Image 1 (cartoon, rainbow, N blue to C red):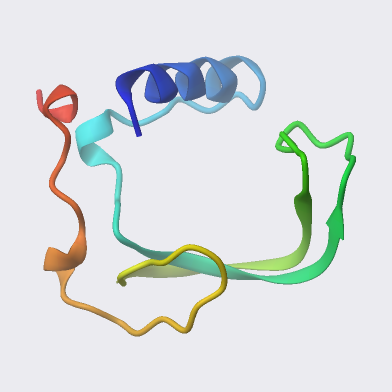
Image 2: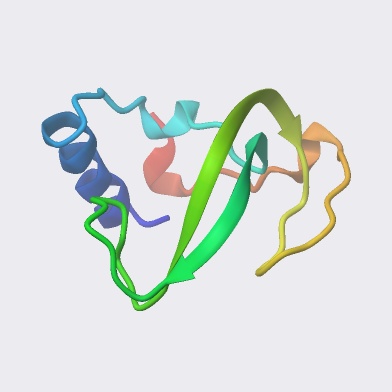
Length: 95
């Protein structure tokens, strides 16, 4: 994520959903934080989170304690990994 993307998310989180975002250096990256069931794919939605052209409809979110894991684009089978899998913070994230 770029600093501009992070700052944009800050405004959305604070003014739209009422949540203060953590400092960038404290973001947990490179892991799994939960699971959901994918029940549909849509081309239009009233959801604040929809930014098209397609979106997944999700149900039954289950939070999970952070598990380090290497990611991939699309659907993939994941396995737990070393905590060293997380990418190094970008320079702008450092205090």
